[in-house]
Image 1 (cartoon, rainbow, N blue to C red):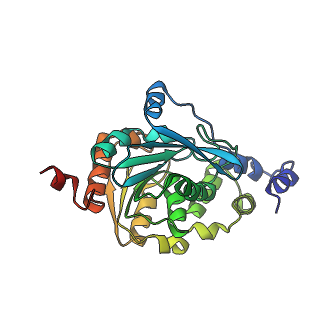
Image 2 (cartoon, rainbow, N blue to C red; image 1 turned 30 degrees about the vertical axis):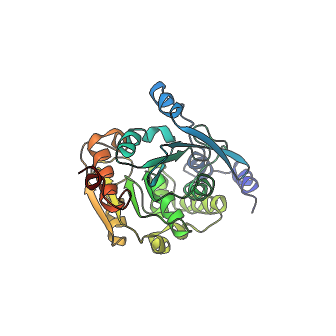
Image 3 (tube, rainbow, N blue to C red; image 1 turned 135 degrees about the vertical axis):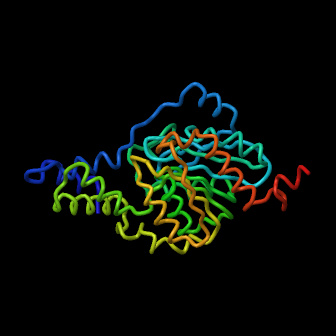
Length: 286
């Protein structure tokens, strides 16, 4: 189906007595492109920059370090690779390389649309272009995008998930509720999103992604997160036998990326589960 044509056919129609499902849908696929701050630009300048092409658009990739296991970082919605910059120094100090990229429609990458499935597919292209990675860290939408990638061939030894939703359906249902869509509008929103992603909404549920949940993972989430409910990580943890859920209070949904304890917990988890040169960093320094 031609998604743009499908949207155009519906763009002049509004659900009676409520908001337009089309307008909500457009907000869900058109991220806000956030520029890098001066400190972030300095961080990016210290990396090796490469590009790849995904669905005809440029994807910007950065790599820090040249030795040790590679850790892929995946940002969330309305974000960019540099927003995970607090993790770079800690991971390099722990003996890892770091790979990060701007997803479709975000940061320095091309494109105008994005969604969790597109980001998951972009992850697979980034790894194909940048080389194998042995671990991954995903924030917000970056977490379920990684779950998609894990279920579609990306293998890692460990992953960290920061305040991520674990059900695409629940994301759409919450959005429909928050924007005042009625039952018909919610169904229309689901249909539009399925046409955009090319897969059923159910294909992004944990029951369909379980084959990728085979490695140890750390789930970090603020119980008072106002954007993605803590219950999302609880459900992910319940479906992932090798996961550990850790509540981190007072960091919200976005400040979690700059919190020292979160960065430290993530680096410590990787040191324990993904040794550098066959031994933990502590062992190699003793």
